Image 1 (cartoon, rainbow, N blue to C red):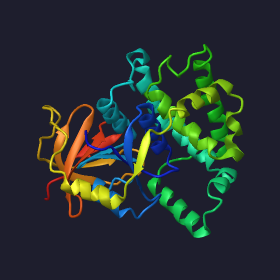
Image 2 (cartoon, rainbow, N blue to C red):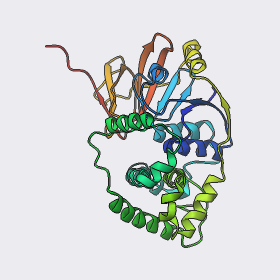
Image 3 (cartoon, helix red, strand yellow):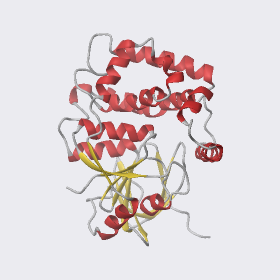
Image 4 (cartoon, one colour):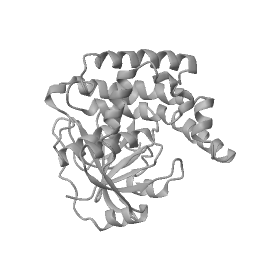
Length: 311
């Protein structure tokens, strides 16, 4: 099995989601720390322009978006299952809600002045200015909740989750953890990093106890790796994961395509189509440092286009 290489940074909520999944699976993995904002030359060398954090590398295969990364990790280490049958389709619906609606409520709530002052108490003013501009550029069309709105919304969301746990179950959808637990946990983790605003969780004792159970899985066994070494590994890898372009999808293997996220950080990634199924799109691209790469995206939340021919 190729080494699992997670490209992440400490304060990234979606990175925490994957770190906890790696802990749940008791896996060893390589840890590459990426910059928190642009420029990210080593990230772009591997992804072709995708700038969200984290992403997962296995040799010369690059997996973007935690929804896809989670499936890849589960396929490599099926036990314990991340998608237990008993959790039904509800686990996918709850996970998608947590990765979008809950996440985009928790982030602006936590980044209110008291929370931001705590999280960035050691950062110089020039960093704060650059960080704010970077995040604004990632989400130009996103309407963030006001602090009163976010507070009210989190109160409702946490009440719903507390109700799920009211029958004494250990995890959100039963006795076993599932993908929904890790997707929800990342937002609680982020809020709890800022004690001045974490009181929003105080009324929800069962939810707090549930979070502690998820957090107890830890992060597995990480080993530091430099981004340069990760790029060199990709360049030296000549094989890729098996892919296929299913018929009837409107595109053919070898087509020039672009892939872009549909919601935020909408940076185009261009390449040659080598994989297309109901669940995944894979493009091949070449970088002068990283060699020939296959970059994988989930179908949900992403748009695939073939460039229009020149007139």
